Amino acid sequence: MENPVPAPAAPRGQLYLLGGVFALVLLLLAIGYFLFLRTDYAVLAQGLRPTDASAIVAELDKRGVPYRLRDGGATILVPEGQADATRVAIAGSDAAARGQIGFELFNKSDMGLTNFAQKINYQRALQGELVRTITAMEGVETARVHLALPEKALFRGDRVEPKAAVTVTMKPGQTADPARVAGIQQLVAAAVPDLPQSKVVVLDAAGHVISPAPVVESAPGAERPADIEERGAVENYYRARARGAVERQMPGVRFALRVLLFPNGAASAGGTGDGEPATVPAAGWTPSGDGAARNFRLRILFISETPINPEDQQVARGAIVQATGLNDQAGDSLSFEIGPIDQPVSAPPVAQPSYAAASAPAATAPVPAQVFAWPPIWLWIVAGIAMAAVLVWRFGGSRGRMSGEEQEAFAQRLRRQLNMTEEAGDAAA
Image (cartoon, rainbow, N blue to C red):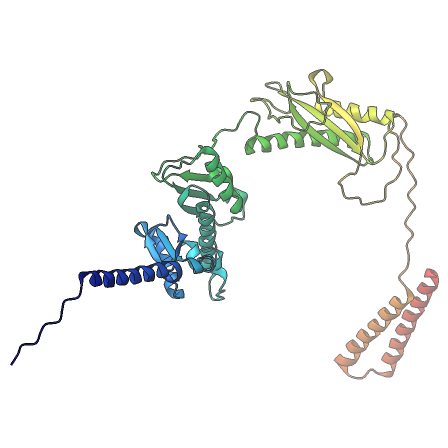
């Protein structure tokens, strides 16, 4: 039996040709995939904190959107075709809050909450909205806002101003300049009712205060509340003395007085006084004039509804100068103006008499004598009937029926009473 002859081996060139064709097909497939089938990813968010990235990833998983993470989870990528729609969806979801609760806390109202719980929710929502606004600023990485909102007191002395503390962490390479710190203070002060900017403290990530220290003492030319009250008390004192003096000299004249205090050395008191710094009495000064001299000037405005003649002006000026001690050389002034008077009017205005001639008193109108008037006739009739009823009850109820003589006597008394009533009615007519 003869052995079969082995087939001749394929040429090496054919093997190379098959390998090249296979490699070419793979290359074409790879190029087609990269050109037509590969999904490009675009950056959805970057520079995220772990907590922010976790909230966004949870939202993507809930929506079924594929994603990729880079830079240790700080950058999130989504398919390029879905990037815009996903970005809009994330912006409208809770993930955009970055863990901060804002005023969406009140989207679902709960009628069972107490007033205290509502106030706490409002404070939480306000703090969250402020954090969102601050973190949206360029260069700010994180922020925390703490508000101290006291209860509103009924009395002014028991009221406490609200306060706020803001902690800001800047991104690497960024610093919180004074202008940015002042802007954050104004933002928080404008968002919280009755919160002054000086009560907002801003701290950096290290816990250092970067906001300017609040001004404890008043700036030059500013008034403290105690100074304002003291100045108002002095103005009221001079106003009362001047009004009393004018009313004694010119009774019946309707007028109003305005007293203004100005420090010595300021602009002339003849101006309007707007913008001039106020002052308080010097230490040791007394209204009676004893002790230290007053360190302020007085400006008194005499306001009347109708013009006052020069003679009456001299009378009013003399009374005011004598009562308040006005001194033109010291800078005091007195002026007369025409304007509305903020006083209740109990009677229609009448012509103001002249008080220039103090020695000629006005004639007093005679007071008509009061005429006595009898009561009307019907009142006497009612009184007679009531008396008759009382007599009937007294004599008829206590001893039974009256005898003939008693009835005759009662009729005569009743007749006399009616005659008296008729005579009184005729006299009154």
